[in-house]
Length: 288
Image (tube, rainbow, N blue to C red; front, side, top):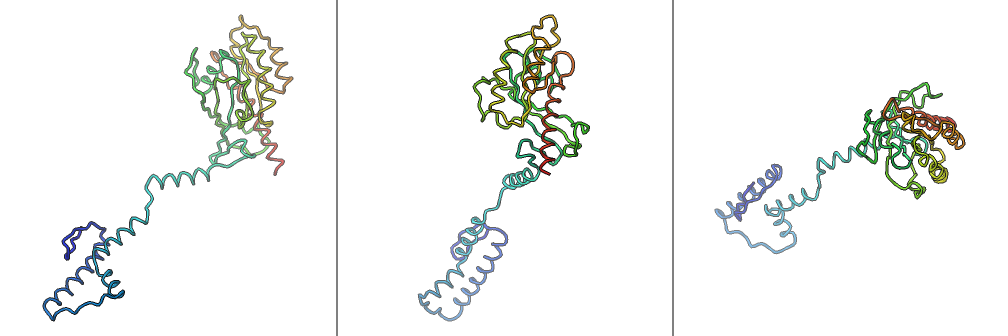
């Protein structure tokens, strides 16, 4: 902080500004001392030039102008700098493959969205819980989305498009009335899992309605698998293998049966994911 010798007021400025004002005030003080010891000061003509000169020599005005200039030159905060850097890196990192059907990051990770479709109490949440957490629970905590990442098998592909890659799946287990969904709600999904309970005939019959919605509104390049759950309950089974396989075959879907309680369930998503990616590989090859 510095003190204005002419008025006694104190101003807080930066070091560089203090140096500038110090020189100005020293010049003013020296000139004033000589004037008092020497001859009587001459009357000043009130001209524009004198006003301009007086303004330049006034330390108070010099400080105010310097401060105003510093304030006008906005310096970005650390948060703004980080946000800008993060946005730039995010833009550079993501590589769009095939019109945005999938995202392929620079770290060789694919991102696909999979929607689970099925009646209530068919084991959808238990299935996703087993896939993502590798655990079984009769009533697992429900989440609308869960993520799972696995390493892609290079032998599944004919080209090197997905070589040394990984696939991150976001499973959407949303409780909604699927028969009332339209194109906007199904947009962006790469795969669908039609879930039914092998011990519940009604859960199997309603798959016809779900299939119609997918065929009508889903992306033509998406892929669908039919998944029969609770296959360990053999004594309570009411839906035969043949009926389920026929339904899947007639609609061009893959079919698999799993038990979230016993054994691995990875086959329920791996086959349909590879089918989807192989199609993307073919499209990319044709485009060159």
